[in-house]
Structures are given as C-alpha cells and as structure tokens.
Length: 132
Length: 384
Image 1 (tube, rainbow over the protein chains, first blue to last red):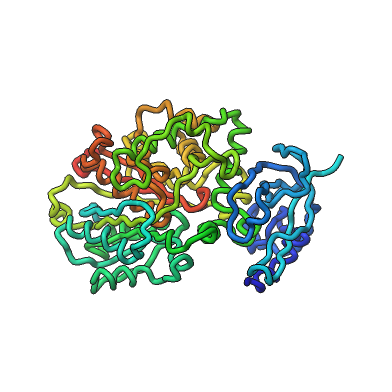
Image 2: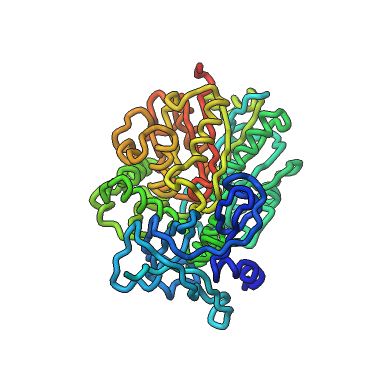
C-alpha cells in the first residue's frame, strides 16, 4: 500500500491542480520544480479547467495487475486546453466511438483498489466525451 | 585516451529459464567472454539489469555476479536506464577502459523476468514509465507504444499493416540465430491477422520479455584483445541522451529527439556519418519505436519510416532477430546488441552474415526514447 504517495498528489489526481510559472505564465501539469518552458522556478498552484481533446488513444486488452476488472479500457493522451497533455483512462464512452480530436472533460473516478479487496480506494482523473 | 577492444563475448539462449538464477545465467555469459580472451584479470565489472530488485528481490547485482563467478579484486556496480540498462553498463565499461582507469572491464547484462509469475511483471516493467502520472492510470509500457502507433497511423495515413515489415524481417533473421527465443519466420498475412494487445499495436508489434544474459570483455590491451585469435573489434564511440520521462510531456511525441541527439553525439565522437554503417541494430521493443528511431535519425522523412524498413538496401537491421525475435531480456538487451554486432564485425554471423560489415551502430532506449544510449562498433582494421 502506498498511502503517502497517494496523499502527496491527491490535489493533482482529484482536482487537476498544476502550476503556473510566475516568469513566463506557462501552465504546467503535473507540478515540477523547474518550468519546462523558461527554466525558472515554478511554484504557483493553478487549477486546470479539465477541458481538453484526444491526441491519441488505445484500447487495452492486457491489463497490469490491479486493473484487470476494468478490461477492456481505453487510455488516451488528452491535450488540455491550457497546453499540457495528460495520460488518463476514458470513461462514460457508451456506444460512442473514440476519435482523435474528440473534445473531452475531466471527471474524478475510482482508478483502483490499492492492496487488494480490503485496500484503500484510489481515485483520480478520467476523461469523458463532452456532451453536445 | 585508449582504444576499447571487445576481447571476448558470451550469451545465453533467450527464453524462459525457470530453472536458472540471475547469478547462474550471468556466469554462463561472462565465463564465455573471459575464456575467449584468455582469462585475463578483471579490473571492473559493470552489470546491466532492470527488474531484479523488484522481480527477484535482489539488489547489488554486481556483487552477486562477482561472488558467484569467483571474481575477486573487481570493483562493481549496476547501471540502470530503464530497458537501456545494458547499454548503460556498456557505456560505463567503455569509459573505464577508454580513460585508462581499467585495463579490462567485464560488462554483463542479465534479466530474470520469470522470477515473477503472473500479471505483476507488467507492473514492474512499467516502473520505467512515470509511476505517479502514467502507470497509475493503468498503463503498461505497451500502452505507450500503442498510443504512439495510433497517432502515427492516423497522422500519416499509414496502412494498417504498414509496420509489419520489421517484425517479418526480425523473425526471418532469427531462424538462423541459435540463441533466439523465436526461430520461426512469420508472414505478412500472420501479421495482419494477429490479435490486438493495445490497439492498433498487435502481438507481432511487441517484443517478448524473456530471460537472458550477455557479456563482453573490454580491454585497451591489444595482446588481450588478440588472445582469442578473433578479428579485432573496437567500440569507436558511446553517447547518451535523455528526453522527458513521461510521453505526455513531449512537445512532439512522434519525434524521438533523444535518438537524434544520442546518434549525433556518437557519430561526432567517432568522426563518422550514419551512411558509414552497414548495420543498424535499431531498438525494436515495439515496431513503432524502430520506425520512429529511423525517422529521428534522418534515414526517412517523418511519416515514411515504415516504408524505409522495406525499401532500404544500404543498412542491415535486426540482423540476429532484434528484440522482436531474438527476444527482449530488458536490461540484458543492450549487451545482446553488442555481442551480435561484434559477431557480425568478426565475420562470425553465419547465415546472417552481412557481407562487408565494417561498422555497426547499436542503439538502446529506456521507455519511449526517454533515455537513449548509442554505441558505434568497428572492425579495427577498417580505415575511417
């Protein structure tokens, strides 16, 4: 079980909180010590809107241990409207086919159970198609 | 600075070695390399390994290998760079000998995937990804390759079977490699019908993880290099480059910039150009990684790498089966590339011999080109 590291990044997982660089205004997710755009120190929290589009996606047929119950599931690279790209499961797909370029929005969902049946539930961001 | 000769090579068959341990596999490879070189004293031992501390609950691999093989008097540590760990260890051996610090350096890559049974091994291999922000969404290393392949095919309108030429070539070459895990040819028809692993990436687009050990004995002493009576092979250059760990942090995910940088640095150090190479052991953990590497090295325009694999006549690829058909023993793979290139340059590759092979470029990567390490090997008699 990995409670400390889940606790450490819960703002990132639940609320898509990253950083805004005070030097060049770049929006950064996830947070890091040095801004990848300008090299300055990046510290200001910034909450992303959760809106983005699908850069690429793949349907997984072989899951790593702990994720088998969700098979088959779709993983996407989602380009957030503010700039950064994240890796996440797509959810609430229904009958809708996934397409590159499809607009999606962030939701907080259960990712897995840490440490088996009695373990801690891990929540995090997934993305669903924007309706309409 | 010294020349660095490969004085001895050794390798095990790549496969599922349930009955053999890390130590035992590594001993077979390193003893073969030592014996070929006339059993010289070893100054340094560098180990390449990725999974052992998780899958085998064994760290300090260098000490394990040295103890088991009776290597006293060595200094040792393990190099780790994701799946490029073997190439990282090779680089350490190269630097030690080139600098004159070590007269001989034994470099061993070893992996025991089968020390862990069941789905958990994919999780351990995914430690090479960004654990907090990639692995935690339920991805494996294969998922990242699937994402790249999907984007590549869509962006460049590549036919669904467009990436099949390399797996077919790899399998054809492995037929004549007695150390390969898969020794049967596959057809393009089989490629088209293969089951999806991480769509559009199919079973033949992904190299099989397996056990194995490979070793080289490096030296700056020409007498030791000549002890085995083999044609002299040198490591001419060694260079590494890094990109963002997470694929999603790349400004242009389809551009493997660390491949470009690593190759350019190695070529500059060797005073050579890519066209001087008869052999390119490209990193084919996934067929898309090989295609993107080819493009990153300027051998084909972006979006055309898949065509270049089939059309090119100048450079031999995956000459002993590559990761796809020889097999992918992760941290050992970089050493298998070195051993195979050395065999080619010595003229010992049998049915797979590339005629007139004088120079080879071998390239390994951790993750989707997050960490790329390249070596250039030459027959010593070659002028350049």
